Length: 428
Image (cartoon, rainbow, N blue to C red; front, side, top):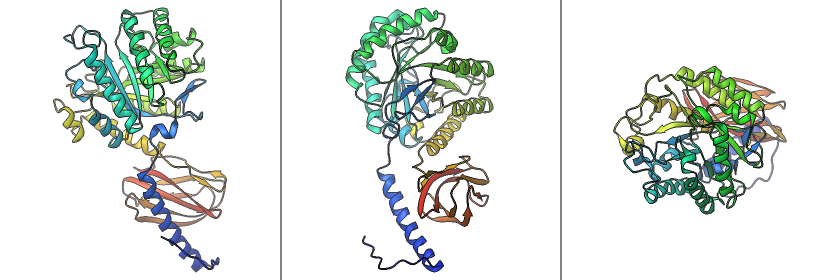
């Protein structure tokens, strides 16, 4: 399409005409952009530890919300270890992170764990890793056991192999000890140092995450005696919202204030058992805490086991996930991850040289735009590109009443300073 302009004046009438033209061009460019939109990994790059935070590669603080698969050695979780699951979570849930929980060896696994059935388990994990890389999302390779030091040699060999195969991909994160239970921090630290050395022999810079004693809750012990010599090392914190409350949040803050970075690689909306005690109110308290403190977090779990922490309805399998047959917790988590993805996936929201921001997102009734420059007017489009709200503003820091809009996702276009900016928001 070629547009010829022989003359542009600044009369009120021509401004309206120009607005219609620029709006049309914006919609064309926006929907063209959605075809080639950045993946999470393209947007944030190789995740880095900067002080007490895991950040984007450029140092920006982030809080990503994702999903963990169930034990790979469990019959009621293993059927989700395929590309369809990863693709669905990345596309339908917009989850930027998938955690592959490699079941190492358990008394209940019937010989299906990695130690007894190495080839099959490795194939499951590699299927998920390959699919995540293809979708442009992060993948956590998790050594999912409560006794990792017992299998230290196997862990070193496994992670060294994974680092050699995948270390050149920014997508890959190594979680080398899921949940120590009664082990001392020295036991965990000694184990971790050997596994880290194996990884770093092949991959010098991808993020590594280490567990801590008492089900990965004693991050204060790690903070008091951290592993040194590796600049891209973080520590996991695990919690279940109906069991672990302010005391554990205080412990996490104290550990961060001591200088270590935390990544929540497993959390649930229920009791610590994973079954019973579904508590959306306490879950939201934790979610707010993690967002406010720029901590990324991964929910447990993608499974159809008859437990309240599982997101797929009991016995529905992969088709239950694909068809949206979700538990109450699953619906809560999917809605939350979708809202976080929309908030984090906004394009640069800039007029002239000034970056604008929304005071809140999602928004209930008043859309507040933080801007020290004068905004001339705003237009809100629905996700089909239809204009649903337009206002002349002529002020900085405007507040727009959006109570007439229905709940859903929208695109905000702001005009001012002879330029235009767009971002996404959610009306709740």
